[in-house]
Picture 1: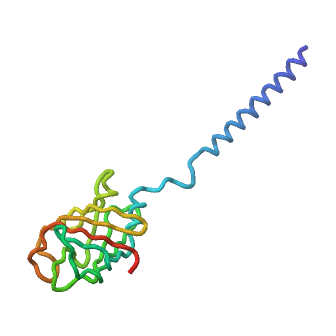
Picture 2: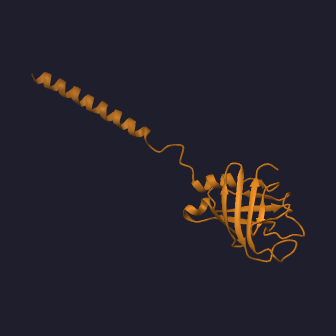
Picture 3: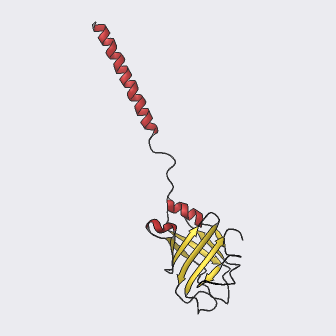
Length: 165
């Protein structure tokens, strides 16, 4: 009888150890994943960092159409993990009002507003929406303007950009 109890205890210990080993192995596989969840700001930056073209798309000033922006491009560049990124504005119209400097920086809005608000380095807050193919920006500009006439630049501007030149 002693031999039978010892044999059963050995088998029980073996089964317990085997079960513990199996459970441990299953938890080991549940550890940190090699594919981490992407940072939402980095995903938004990825959508924005392109060259955007205004050609043939609406530009308005105080809700009235503005001409002269067919050659206007806005190129945005940035680095993942950073809150500030750069822009360059090329093809700005000459001889007419424009609220764009030739280059500058943007920062994302705070909190959940990063997906709808940007602040330019001249403290202009820009409301935006971006998809894989289109960028829309609206802002109220206060200042003298950057090229051409310096009057009548203050007001609400709306730009629609596309990826196709």
